[in-house]
Amino acid sequence: MVKWLPDGSLAFLGRIDYQVKVRGFRIELGEIETALRGHTAVQEALVLAREDVPGDKRLVAYLLSSNGSTPSPTNLRHFLQETLPDYMLPNAFVPLEAFPISPNGKVDRKALPAPSQEVVSRESSYTAPTTEREALFVTIWEEILNVKRVGIHDNFFTLGGHSLLATRLFAQIDKRIVKGLPITLLFQYPTVAQLAAVIEQKRPSDAWSALVPIKEGGTRPPF
Image 1 (cartoon, rainbow, N blue to C red):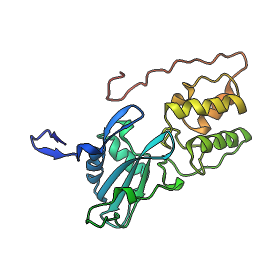
Image 2 (cartoon, helix red, strand yellow):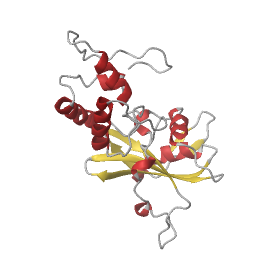
Image 3 (spheres, helix red, strand yellow):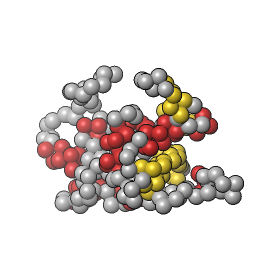
């Protein structure tokens, strides 16, 4: 599969049999690989749609560094966001010394390792919970996302969260922390610290709104 570039040339995106469907979106893995190779510190890249947890398919990028130092997940995510939509951003970036090779001399994609829970994408350094409520939120997030050591400033969606997991998350919050929270709060306050702070500040007489305000600013259309 190829696509036209603005200068009239063609860019090879990958084989069409590497097209996958993740959470309702049809994704060409080769397009993500091509974008990653555009990073100055990435020599080669492979992307898989893995389902290490049944029913939870995630994109995982495997990278060979061009200079011996692999960029951070945050750096790579920000780089990819310049050209790819959010649903095409990998949930984990796994640096490797070399790709596994099959007996016939080709890359053995099936032999690529499952990402450890420590290599999931994070937007910030780890910050431990400071209150009992934050600690309980962290426990629930780790259970739902299958991620170790969630920090209070980690973004739910950056860690691999999506609408189906958000539904499970709020079902647990309803059982164990507070009842009646609208799931739309997660889109406005996607970190443990933000969500816990909103609940702390809420007065008993206040009603929760299920509406999500349109984001102001930005270069993309709202719909």
